Amino acid sequence: MSPTRQETVEVDLGGRTVTVPKGGLYDRYRMNTDLDEVARDPRVSSVDFFRQLRKTKVDSPIGETLTPNFYYRISTARLTMLARSRAIRNRLPEQLAPLQVAPGIGLVSVMFFRYEVCDIDFYTEAAVGVGVRPARHGKLGFFDLVTGLQNDHLDSYVFSLPVSSDIAQVRGHDGYGFPKWVTDVDVDIDNSRTTARVANDNGDTDLALSVATPAQTTHPTGERVSSLTSYTSIDGVWHSTLSQINVLSAGSASLPRNLDLQIGQGRMADDLRSLEPIKAVRLDVTTEGQLALHMPVPTSVPSRG
Image (cartoon, rainbow, N blue to C red; front, side):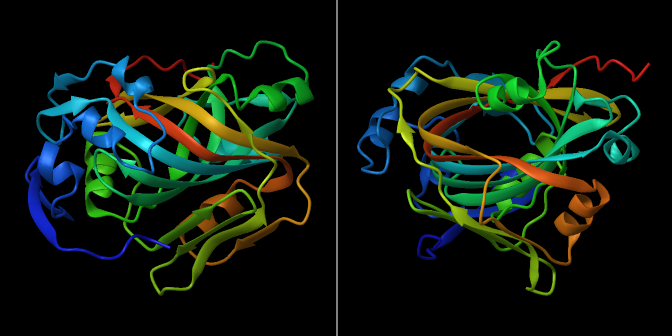
């Protein structure tokens, strides 16, 4: 369940007016959050990960802002599926190519996120994305590559990224170039069950997931930090966005059983169907983690050739 609705205030983001919780972290700190204040939040295990990261003031399409964006308590679920590279290639921009785990086979992911405490306040998010080259996997065997995805650096391209808050939509769409829109996104992840549902424009199910949460392993802060690079095009220029994930409690299941993935009607469902997924091969669930999301930077993207 989402936190109880509260009063909101209006703020300006690069000429766009958005509402944020009154008295929330963004209202009080505008991205320059007091880490000592966050450390007192009982939902946050530690802020040591963030004390090692320096925020920088940058100009962006949403105006002057601080980067990275800190997420102090998150939970996530990612279902990785095999799909035909042909179907993935048909959807990708021509500058990108699928990451192949075997000849003609690529990876499609459905992801759900619950951001409990962060610089821009609570919100939820979902995504349909694919693994792309360049990636640092070399010539790994199939199971070695899939097993290593949760720890390695993965490069990705996202087709759908609905969110539950205005500020997340404007920052993500205008500032990062992601395909974000606002809708109802319910995400609940605990040690026993992982459930998520994204609503379409009519309030019906776009995409939904229900599955037992894999057994969790806890990690000291900073022991297991993974990263993800996402590619987006902003005003015709390719950019890369780096995410650093501090995993505190997580677990995985290969070839997950008793999986209930509902592909309904909507933008996410359409994107997932167009990628023609074949089989679910891995479920990764993080019941507790932290995230530093950097602003995108211009990058050169090799063509398929």
